[in-house]
Image (cartoon, rainbow, N blue to C red; front, top):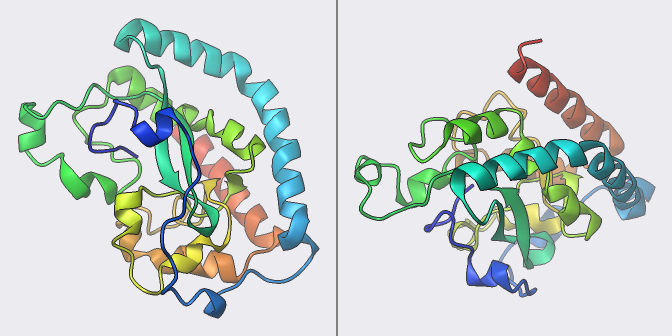
Length: 236
């Protein structure tokens, strides 16, 4: 989850502001979340309550992570990245820094770790810019903890399609935009599927199916799969 200049905060993120990415041509009416109490307000209420609890529970872990990143990588331990959210609105997504500065003259960039290729997979393990500490933070998804604040702000959900960069959304096909019918999530169907090793843009149907089948049961299934993945990462 990087930008073309990995750790220079985008201007949009430095001064967060909402604006719309055009999705007028998308067949939005063809894909709609299931009507019901959960989709209308239950999911948002649960998001806020659970995010508040998780913010308090994980605060010590996040504080230690930020201090270690500050000591090893310098300033800007906490990043903001401009992402596209619900209804095409752009917001500033928070994230713990896990990579070295993205310098254009770095030899590793010339070996192919640049451009849109980096956006094909959200947690690319072989990106040469990862620091040893960054790999640990990403392995246990500690780098995503600041996004709990995005949930509290109403910009994200605990569960949903991952928010994408504007440059990626601009390349969406006609049937890809309905994923913006719901708030983007910290974790979602693609991250916990068996297809997560295949680029997200080739598996957009996972997000579309999630929007169409949105219910507490589908969210619970994603939660269980996410917990399982974290346990596997910890070697338990």
